[in-house]
Length: 387
Ligand SMILES: NC(=O)c1ccc[n+]([C@@H]2O[C@H](COP(=O)([O-])OP(=O)(O)OC[C@H]3O[C@@H](n4cnc5c(N)ncnc54)[C@H](O)[C@@H]3O)[C@@H](O)[C@H]2O)c1
Image (cartoon, rainbow, N blue to C red; front, side):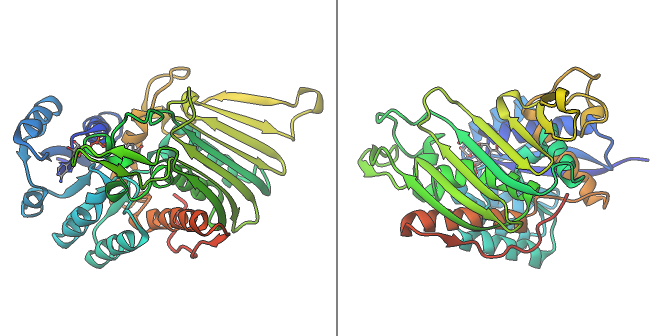
C-alpha cells in the first residue's frame, strides 16, 4: 500500500535548515514510518539562496516569502528554522492556516510570545513540535530509561553546563547572518535562551519540573557595531548565565552557559547524582554514557563508560551494527521519526509547544532573578510529557 505523503515547507536555509533537511531526507530510509516525507518547498529571502539550497537538498519548489507557504494547499508541515524573532509570527500564521508546525528553539523570544504560539496551535488543533534535539541523542534517551527504571533512586543533584568561546573578540559585530544571536531584539536573550534552554529542556525531561531559580548573568562586551546600522550599539544579551535551581522533586541543581570559556566550542555536559547511582554525559563524546552503580560488588565498584551502540540501546537498531557509533545529525533524524510516529498515534509528537513554553518559563525566571538579584519562582507548567 502506498504510504501517505507529508509535504514539508521549510523556512530558513542556515545551520538548522541544513540539519532539518538532512533529517527529512534520511528519516524514511532508516525508520519504518507510515508517511513519506516530501521536501516540497523551501523559503529564503532571496531567490538565489532558495534555489541553490533547493538544488542541493532536493526541494521541489522555492518561495521568497514564508506567507506564500501558508496559502499553498500542497504544504502539510511548516518547519521554522529561522532566527528567534520570526518564530511567533510564522508559527501563528501556520496554525491559522491549519498546517502542522515544527519550530526551532527557543519557542519565542519571551513568555508572552511563546504563550501566543501555544494558544494558536492548540486552538487550531494542529500537530506541533519544538526541535529540542538533545533528548534524541541515544545516550541521553538511555539516561532517561535508567532514571525511569529507578536505578538512580532518589535524585539529589543535577549539574549542567554549555560552554562556548566564539564571542570573546570585541571586534565581532552584532546583528545579521549568524550574528543575530548577539542582537537582543532578534534573539530575545543571550546564552540563557540559546544554550541554557537546551540544558533546561533536557533537565526537566529527565528530572521533572523546576520550581525556583537564583541566577546571575553578565554582558562582558557592552557595545558592538551593529551590522545593519553600522553604528556602535549597546549589547542587550547575556554573554554568560549561571543559576542555582530547585526541582519540584526536591533535588538541587547548578546550570552554567557562556560564550567566553576559551577552548570550549560546544561543550554540553550533564551529571545526575542519585541515592543508588549517578550518570554523566558529554556532547563531545555523545555516544557514551557514564554510569556509576552503587549496587555493584564493592571491590569492582566504579564508573563505567557505556558505548551506546548496541541494538538494544534507544534508536540504535535502526543504524549500523553494534560498536559503530552515530553523531549529532542523527538526533534530528530521531526527532523527526518520533514526530511522524506520534502523528500515527504510536508515540508522542514531543516536545510540544506547551512543553517548550515550560522551558521558556524557566529562562524567563532566570533572567528575572539575575535582574532583581533574588530568587525567582517558576510558574508551574502543565502538559510536560514523559515521552
Ligand atoms: N536545535 C539546535 O540544536 C539548534 C542549533 C542552532 C540553532 N538553533 C535555532 O535554530 C534557529 C535558526 O538558527 P540557525 O543557527 O540555523 O541560524 P542561521 O543564521 O544559520 O540561519 C537562519 C536562516 O534563516 C534565514 N532567514 C531569516 N529571516 C528569514 C525570513 N523572514 N524568511 C526566510 N528566511 C529567513 C536566514 O537568511 C538564514 O538562512 C534559531 O531559532 C536557533 O535558536 C537550534
